[in-house]
Length: 147
Image 1: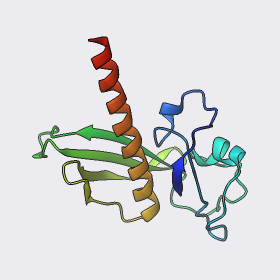
Image 2: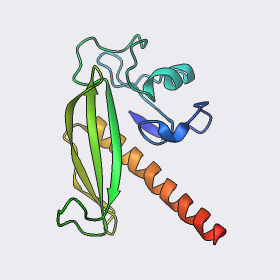
Image 3: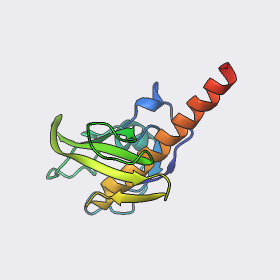
């Protein structure tokens, strides 16, 4: 369960991580709830998904990894307000989609219109959204400096 950004990770392409950056947090595996993974475990397992080498990984699980993408405003022919950010998610099992859907965030009201039923996936979506918004702000600043 991600809690805060992990500023001292050594990933080669940090923006390619499933949540847009590295996170520290607590384990949610059955029997290990609330345990804090080591820096190495965060680096090699928790932030990547498919943590087969993690000794806490339960053998029976719905998903191995969750991936996210974001889209601002309408599109797809759907009637979506310009202030709405759609978070698309795919829960993967054995590198195949096991569940997928769209979560909706109202940027004007700073609240979720549609949330995920699993609190862990919802928290990951919140972390991803924060990283995505920060990246967009940084791109806007970079563009303003270039102009």
